[in-house]
Length: 393
Ligand code: LCS
Image 1 (cartoon, rainbow, N blue to C red):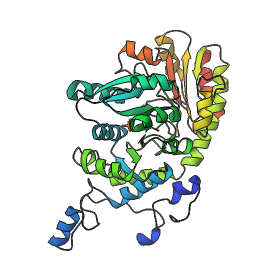
Image 2 (cartoon, rainbow, N blue to C red):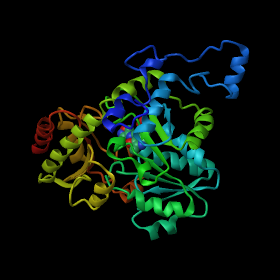
Image 3 (tube, helix red, strand yellow):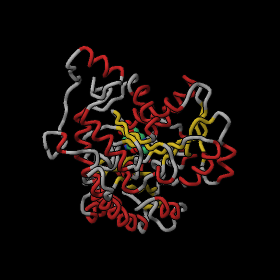
């Protein structure tokens, strides 16, 4: 199966796993073991030295985790993958691997709140500076790439404003200077967007979201070149220790099998709910990359397969109006996170992006009346009816 090139919908189910290597078990076994035994002291020595293949200790590698890592590498069209205990463990391991004191990171203007927090920490504790960029033109990028820029870090679509970054534009500017481009692909999943095929170097996921799909795991994934992944695996992952648990890897292997089917449904539901929200008099703005009027619609068509399952919108009124509206919802759950079967709504200004100072938040386009809807897999009419009853009061 691994030899033959198969389609994405097949890869999510089979990639990285051969039953004949695991007692013919149809489903990848859960190797719930913290450590592995050696047949002799010499074998232990060889495994530690890396002269003999084999597992040693689950912080350094585990067979269930290896299957997941091979699968995500195949889905993202990369050479190798690495799994982490959270999306933030993945983000921090990558940024720490790519930078040193005195370096600079160029970041898309608008990122997840905890990534923003991590960048503050890198600046204050380790003197690793950063700047935010709209990344709208080559000239802007060329001006903002400094002699000490160690990497470019992008989210697209951006959490939660749903603005997009043109990956190929950034890659063109970065390649001239030999700077790696890192993309947080959480909002798309590899079904909708594969940044490595556009020339980017490293992809990160909060696997907690669409890759898991069932809201029962916190995990992160990284895909990149073999050398880079081996380096992260032996340094910032091994020694800082944000390793995934085998059980969480097993749950992700189960969840990811339905990724293509789920993403189609999330995207279809979101497209219908966008139409509804767009036409509602109490909604002052809707941010959804599938909107033909969205300023980045052309970018969406170029680099995404579909527009995805997230919609942000502003409600007429104040922060209290937004909160009252949330409190009236019945089916839609008030929760952060995204990509689950359940439709979730959250208020970025007081939740996911509360750590970003108000002035910075506003520069990113996060007002107090902005809400983010992660459209689930329910019948779209039921989601619409819930929005409708909460908006009609
Ligand atoms: N990157 C993005 C784009 C995210 O949205 C998140 C989490 C992370 C990284 C971190 O992943 P984690 O460590 O949580 O697995 N985003 C969240 C959100 O929007 N609501 O709750 C968490």
